[in-house]
Image (cartoon, rainbow, N blue to C red; front, top):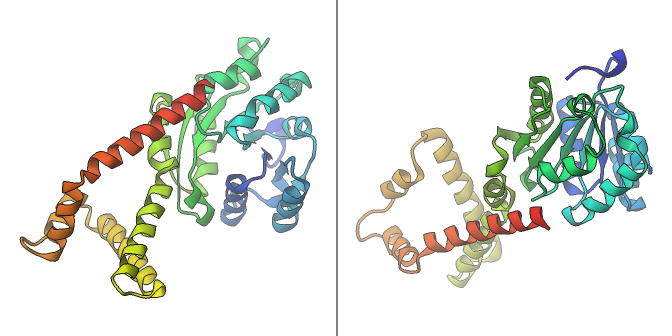
Length: 289
């Protein structure tokens, strides 16, 4: 991606300053990918944007059109249900009319397809203008708040290798990054977008089970959290399939086998598959709504 108008630094603007936008802003500053002076943001909640401005020393703007016209990269970080209204306001105000420069548009709204953005942003645009306004769809997740995120992204046909590289730089500040076909994004949303909640649910259940076995809440929490961290670390370091690692600690007739048998009898794998499928279906419904 080329630097605009010969400026020394690219600028990135956030329309919406919720938790995920904050995670991105914090990560970009922490890693040095962007300085506070290179970051603009706006939000409909005055208290929220004041907090972001004071905490990260970024530039605050209450006019979304100004953010678009002032930036090389714009991150659309509003909720999916609010996106149509935001885009309509931007299009009506001709925010996307400045075609002398290149603008990379990034959406982090779950379920919304690239095509849905193209219909709004590309309305009345020539092919040359579209080529200067690539659109990228991103699915981040909440561990990005602590620099341990998983972000998957898809780009439209107008994105150049430079745009892809810039997207990877921005998202890489928050954790791991995967470039994939958009057709896989509903599955990605179900796996990594919603996935942390599945993990939290299992951790929550383990803690409650420990308490019912006579452990204090503090003891159950420590044992559960340490076990999860250790198991994940073992998978990372050993590089073995999780099924193989599970079999190694499941001795015939032992305690682990007794627990696994309950999982199998209650078809836990089927439940997990059904849950992920339901999340993927819902992601597709959001994209069509």
